[in-house]
Image (cartoon, rainbow, N blue to C red; front, side, top):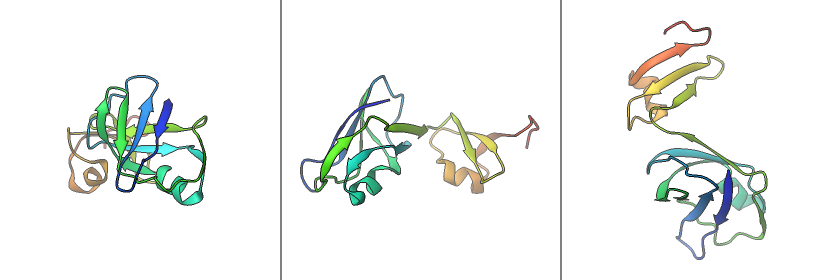
Length: 128
């Protein structure tokens, strides 16, 4: 769960997210933020999407989003963060429901096309 979001204090600075517990992310991992509310639509559109993270600590990471021009009152009551960390299951393909376990450092978007998946398991337990 997200416990705090520190918006950029000036142009060019990243946004820092604090999690309630250790996040287990690595720098370069992709996360998806969702449910951040209360700010102007332009800033919310930049926050509530996919981001590549830089790890700051076990409970903090930054995203390359400049939010210094945000207006409104930040609301993180319903905010969530989900990750696509190497070596964790990643569901790919619309409707196909294929689970791929990826080699360390292989981004999910390249594995579907490069054959970099170590194991694919289709829905129903059949190996692909």
